[in-house]
Image (cartoon, rainbow, N blue to C red; front, side, top):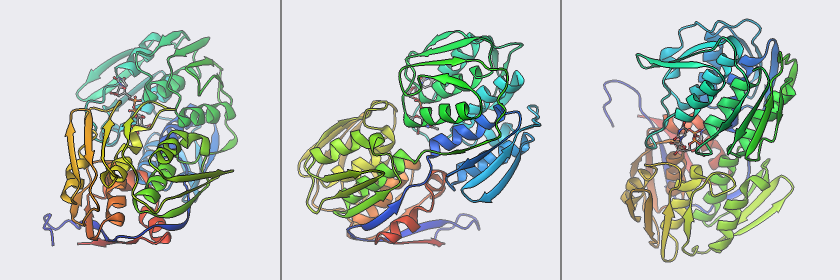
Length: 427
Ligand code: UD1
């Protein structure tokens, strides 16, 4: 039993190996939800959000909205109404906003709605340096002044005026944040070299449903024609989670299983589908369902993570588990984050042979993984270690579950329903 000074420690106990079999339902997208919730602050009225994932990042965001004066009504754990008629942008949200990365969207949203905002500099998964210089460049181009004060970032604008903004890097966060800041700005904002991830389209669709005029989301040029007000008074259903669906696709291959993934947008998963087929696996797309299956050892592969529509960095660790037992030596080049191979140390404890050097890792495929105690270092690493535990011989104990709970709804229940021997216990 671990002694953390009286604090209860939760862990997952997984006994494997189990080939996963059955059907799994995909929840709403975490990365869309954590942008749409702050986007509600732009509405002078209320809106209903459906298909909201029941995860800790969403609950935290709802708490922040309430601190800011919004009224959040829960109809079910996946369906809320947010009334943002009265907003107090001076509320003390400094500490709470430091807890996660996506709090940066409050800057764009509150700047757009109130012309002034101060939040804690964003925290979140430790994947290396995570600057927000491109966000700031965008706000300043729109007419805001920004400053850093005692670990907080402050942005102020008398008036935001649309302009052309070129992003040096196709940043997901900067694209969405500039979109949020410019929805109510005067004139037209053009974001060039915008990121194209599915949740960017989802945020634009949400804002347009509430009365905004955004065109081109999903391409690399987004045009936002400023409107006077977002009236809201509508409901919106969040897009299915591309990364959760990809996690289950890779779990099917890693465990030599056969899974039907329901309620997903198969187009969002084309890069993953292509790689699974390349290493020998089978994928059958049918409407909003994907069947993924393979009962043999996959072949080796070379993968580079890239912005959408490339192979997502958020599925890199899960793919790393698949390649740990592939036939031959595989290479993953991480194209987005500096330090996204921390999970490989944990997989090596389970018998994997992975050498990580900077932004590349070499996976010398072994016959099988063996259960061990492992520690989650970030959200997607957590999903990867669960998959590893299900595919490994013997018992795996997974610690630091708070990372996983940030972004996956009922993860162990979903895995249990498709056959995994997995339980959460308190030590
Ligand atoms: C979002 C996702 C995250 C995913 C990532 C890449 C959310 C809440 N998180 O993170 O899960 O891994 O996209 O798909 O949606 N950069 C700068 N300056 C900036 C902004 C970014 O240099 O101002 C760099 C980053 O260091 C990184 C790259 O641009 O190397 C991409 O980052 P970005 O797309 O902004 O990621 P996030 O929005 O933080």
